[in-house]
Image (cartoon, rainbow, N blue to C red; front, side):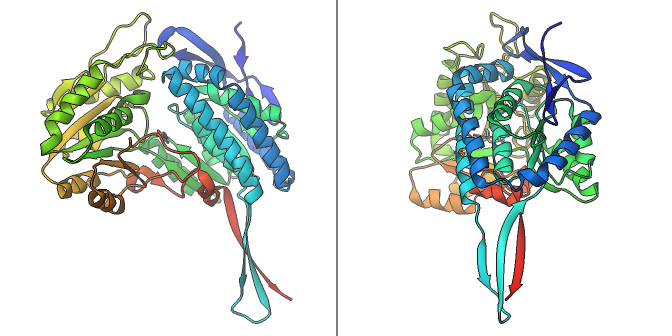
Length: 481
Ligand code: UN1
């Protein structure tokens, strides 16, 4: 019997009722490891343990929590090559991207270790004589974290770290497809010295573990990153539960990258290729609509195609690889379906879009670039979540801005221009939570707020100091003395 990575519930590593094989998308013959799949009972036990641990944990000193998060950060950073390799092997992003993501997770823990020492409040004068008002923040309680497959360690890190910093107890349910990195992270945290019940890892299916989490009356808040369809269900379940749960949702994007005639072509092409195709395009911040002005359009398309021609799509762990495989067969089918749809709608395939054969069996797809598309086509309106982008030709900056905002989403947007006037106007008028000038729409810092508008996000921002809005509850205390 192969070794199974167990769940961590109530301070103990426990076998699941079921097991899943974690498969390498670069080589489907390679099993990364076997991981337990928890049951509703495991989840309920985790919540009970979190509830029991909460009174003591929420009253620990900031120094204790700071030291713990710092210790975890140190181990993550010291092991970044090994953990990056595990991440790339299970998810399919390149080794450089995998190691980079692990380093980001380590830095996130270091940042929130510091935040433990900055947990402050406010004192205000009351409008009534002799009364003082104190505004403080307390932990929310038991938080459920549901994380996606595309950032197997960074997203668990940016939810777990602020949750613990603010004194909450955590139940994490990582994506069933990539449990390995979240398992390794949990192991690091447990060994850093978290008391039993403070962190519980319950791997398994969304329909079983996720559902039980959403329905449990003792879970106070749920932070979710994933698709819009699942996000909607998460929100509905959190509102239906009694008491209602606090919700934070990070969902899809259809992020525009505007390229104006006055752009530096090299900068624009770099932003476009990185934003749309790196990490195999599997980022909610990926650029998928290139909105390009007439005068630079043909040069931009030709330069993108030339750049795409020299990018190696191959095994994520090989050193020459620029783009790894798609994560699994289901995602590959979705990418191919959209490539067909874009063609049927009249888009012209300027590059890629075909399945590639490599040394090992994997989900290899040549990055696809469509031209001659309009913003009302499905390829411009629906999130693909793969290495697929399309170019919409526009006449002016005004038209570019209007089209970039004409979307159900609003996570990230970008503009490439050398004009201060257009850059400034775009920053102010783009209906997105994050705006990039002469940079890719994806690849964000870890110490500043992350989140979007419209259909992309719901609830308060993640990351940086703004994470406290979700992970703490404000108390207003009046004292007459
Ligand atoms: C990034 O672009 O650096 O799921 C981060 C996602 C986002 C994270 C993107 N929540 O793709």
